[in-house]
Length: 633
Image (cartoon, rainbow, N blue to C red; front, side):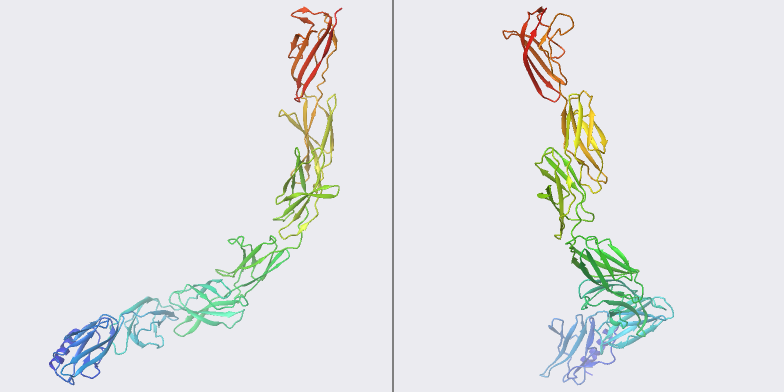
C-alpha cells in the first residue's frame, strides 16, 4: 500500500466517526483512487484513498475539491466536508504526464421529508410520504422499530394497541448515500373508530365555480365526491385532510346543472370508505318577471333528507331573508315589488349546521295594470289659492300626478306633482272650484279616472239687528263623504268659538261688543283624512251713525245738546264753527256734546257748521259735516 494510501485510511477511520458509512468505498473513473462516499446531504465528509493501481506514488499529488460555485482549490488534505448542495467533481492530478482521475460527488440539500399521518380503524396508522427528494425513506415507528421503503412504495402501516400518543419520524436516504439527512417528526393518537367529516358551506360564485368549506378532523384521510342533478353514482374529486379548510371547484356547468357534494372518510390503511357525510347540493335559481309579480324558481336535490328549508334574500335587504320557505318548495312568487325596478334574489339552503348559497339572479319588474284612481281629495281655500291634498292609492309607490280643473266637464290642466300636495293659484275664493287628480306609475301606466273634489265657497250677510246668515255648498271629494261641518268663528282678537252642524247653512245673532266677525267652514271627513276648509269671510256690524239737525239747550232735558251717536267707534273728533268759520267747540268723545255755549256764555240762536271724523273697529274712517240749528225759546 502506498504511504499516501495508508495516510488516507487513517484519516478516514478517524474523521468519519459519527457519520454512517455505506458498506463499500467508491472507485474513481480510472480506479486510481477510492472515496468514502459519493452521495449524502449537506455536511457529508468525503475522504480519498489512493489505490495500489495508481500509476505513481502519490504522496505529493494535488487533490482538487470543487465548491458550490464551481471553483476548486487544490490541497493535499484527503478529507473535505460539503456544506452546499449540488454535483461536484473531485480530481487528483497524478504527475509525470499521467493526467487527472476524478469522481462525481452528489450532495443533496438537508431538508427533512414531508409526510402525512392518517389514523385508521383498530389503532392503526398509515404513513403517507409526500416527499420526492430522496430515493428511500427510513421510518421510525415510535416504538423503537424502524423500516426503510423506496420512493413510490405503498404506504407502511403501523399497529398500536391503544390511543396513546406516538411520535413517528421519517428521514430521507438516497441510494449509495451516507445516512446523514435530517428527519421530520409528527405526533398522532391512534384511533379505534374514525370521525366523519362534513361540508360546512357550498357557495356558488360564478357560472362555473363553487367554493366549499369543510369541517375535518386531524390525521384523517377524506375524499371529496361529486354527482350531478341528483344522481347516485358519485365520482371521486380529490383527497382532503385537515390542512384544507376550503376549496374552489372549477370547470362546472352551474347554469344547467346542480351538483351534490359529500365527504367520504377513508380508512387509509385498507383504502376503503369508512363512512359518508350528508350531501350538500348547489342551487340553480331562475327568475321569470311577470305582470306585477316576480316568479322565482330553483332546482336542487336533498339526497339525505336533511334539508330544512330555503331562506330567500332580496338585494334591498341582504342581511334579513325576505321569506323562508319549506324544504319541499321549489318556487316563490314575490308580489311586494315596485314597477320598473331591478330585483336580485339569492337562495340559501339550510342543511342543519351547513348551508348552500346560490348565485344571485336578477330581473326588472314590470306592470301593465294602471294604478287605482284617486278616491279622496281635500281642498283648503286660502286668499287666492286652493291647496289640494289627496290620498295615494293603496300599495302604490313612485306615482306622478296630473291635476285638472273641471269646468262643467271640461278638464283644464293645472299642473303636475310627484307628491300628494298641489297648490293652484289665481282662483276666486268666493266660488266653488272643482278638481280631478289623475295618476301615472313608473311603468307609464296611467288612469284618467278620479273622484271630483269641489272646494267649499262660504257666503254670509249681517243685518242692522246683528242677525247673521251663512250659506255654503256641500263638500264633495271624499269617497265616504262628510260627517259634519264645523263653523269656526273668531273676532280677530284671539277669541274664537266653533259650532257643529250637518246642514249647509247657519243663522245666529251676535250680541258681542265686537264689530268684526270672521267665519270659515271646515268639512269633517268620515275617514282619517285632512279636513277641507272654505274661504274666510269677514262680516261687519253696522256702526249706526246718526245726529240731529237742531237742538234746544233750554234745560228741559230734551234735546239740550248736540252730539253724534254710533257703535264700535274707537277714534272720534267733533268740531263746531260759527258763521265766520271760527271753531267754537271741539270734542274727542261721543260722550262730550256741545251745549250751545262758548266759554260758558250762551250763543245766539242760529246755524252753526260742524265736522266729525271717526274710525270704527273695522278700521273704517267716517267723515260727516253739515249744519246744526241752535234754537232758543
